[in-house]
Image (cartoon, rainbow, N blue to C red; front, side, top):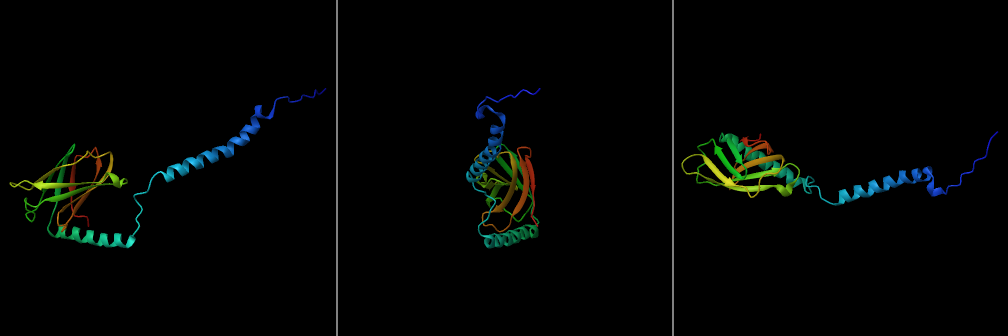
Length: 169
């Protein structure tokens, strides 16, 4: 009729004990991995002082308004690390140096500031970046060294090699 079969394998050779141990074990390993990822870096997107950021936004809007009032616009051409900016305005003299800022969308340690020097014959400014832009979204700002006005734009590197900059109102 029925034969009584006794299991003679030890517990560590059985499937079910290891299955029951593996479920919480994977949760422990995943939580340790999550902690290591979270503790390994800081978020550059978090701002400590919101009040100062609010004041900076108001100042930025004033600079953009000044650029719109002067009817400023610019075209930027990027060739590897060489930059060439053409500014459409009679209000900015070629002797005046301009400051060009490349701000990465998520990694602030990649940001670059380039000093552009004017060509005395026409409305062209040129400069050289220290390193080529890494792949990603970049915000670009150009202003004089006295920070009286500002033009801005956004681009995707390395696909965009030309960019139109205008007042950000």
